Amino acid sequence: MNIQGYWLASGILGVTASTMLRTLNSGADAVVTKSIGSISRKGHHGPILATSHGGLLNAIGLTNPGIDAFEEEMLILRDAKVPVVLSVFGDSPEEIATVAEKGAKMGPSAIELNLSCPHAEISQISHSPKITHDYVRAVKDVVDLPVFAKLTPNASDYVSVGKAAQDAGADAVVAINTVRGMKIDINQKRPILGNIAGGLSGPPIFPIAVRCVYDLYNALSIPIIGVGGVSTWEDAVEMHLAGASAIQIGTAVMEDIEVFTKIKKGVNAYLKDKGHKSVDDIVGDAGGIKS
Ligand SMILES: Cc1cc2nc3c(=O)[nH]c(=O)nc-3n(C[C@H](O)[C@H](O)[C@H](O)COP(=O)(O)O)c2cc1C
Image 1 (cartoon, rainbow, N blue to C red):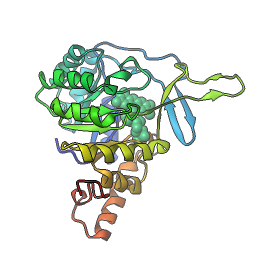
Image 2 (image 1 turned 180 degrees about the vertical axis):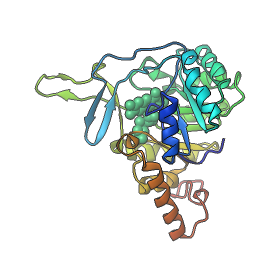
Image 3 (image 1 turned 90 degrees about the horizontal axis):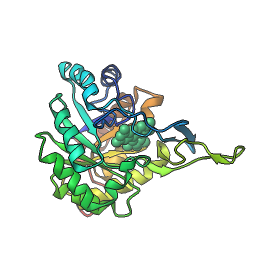
């Protein structure tokens, strides 16, 4: 699939075919499904969402129906011939490979590996270059589709992790997943989220995402898919300048499903104004070592 445009990020409106089709009809160029595992999973007990400092903290815990039950939704999307990236996770390289292999037969355009949910057991995978390599390799060995590795900003050396994903054959990296955080109720004097810790998304994490994309762009030769706090066309331009070829949008979609159309309009006007032919002209143009 072409790694360009503005896509729905995993976990937001990505559990049913109807909400994904609605997002595509509202201007998304592709959709990424909720991360799907080998069996159904209830997730963490509530509260699972809290707002903080203009962002959203979630500790959903990878609630999903399991890959076999998800086939029904995938087949509707396949019949509609729309670009869908299937996000998968697993507790071991063998498990994620099994989920990806089953899912690849359901018609997605690509597979995204969630190696980095900060409030689930899988949070540690993309802290380690070696473990990340094993997960990506296991999936590349069994599927014939593009494979994207989603990284965490919570790893101190995410660039080495990105390089390990690239060495294992990843076709792109996705940066970033949510940033680990928490919120405390000052009257009850207790953490608000049922899981205590959660993942922060939305505008407060935008500068963190830009920095990660910039670092990865300068270290890797595969495309970078930028995600994290993008809500305006100015954010999208900044993310492209840092090195993102495509951009995913999550939290901002909850407020305004038209965000894709608005961003495209703004980016196109910016490109025209600056005399550029396409987004490709500005990817990574922020002065990193490659430009
Ligand atoms: C409610 C919610 C659920 C999410 N679920 C997933 C998920 O299942 N898999 C995944 O890889 N990322 C998941 N994410 C992370 C997003 O895909 C994205 O990486 C992150 O929210 C940063 O982008 P944003 O600021 O545009 O939301 C979730 C985020 C939110 C807010």
